[in-house]
Image (cartoon, rainbow, N blue to C red; front, side, top):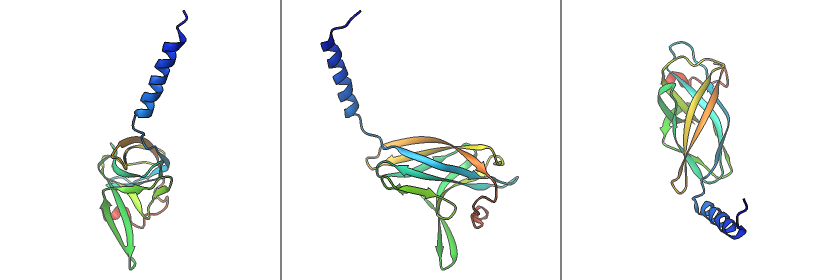
Length: 159
């Protein structure tokens, strides 16, 4: 069966316009995600990754089923004294890779529900908010690396 070309073209044009009218969602990519392994009964560990957003955005929340508490922290050094504080968001400037690593911003998984072992994968849910307040949820499976991967300078023992 053949359809008249004119109604098809109008329908196609309407669909294109509809797609253009939808709010553009900033895309954020995640690379090099990983979680540090734990020993039995250890209550916390860190998750690390690199985030790159296509437009000015911020990381506003992280969740994981392996921990009762998940927070984003920032490590600082002041006169050779290490400090740690929870932050409520991490700015993700457009096109700039932002590293969450053991020596700066990072995700803390606290009150772990079980030991996190090398070779496993930890599910993480990241919530990114763009400058217009639109939120994007990213599901990440972060591989667990050995305990001695990029030492955290004793950070896990602070919790």
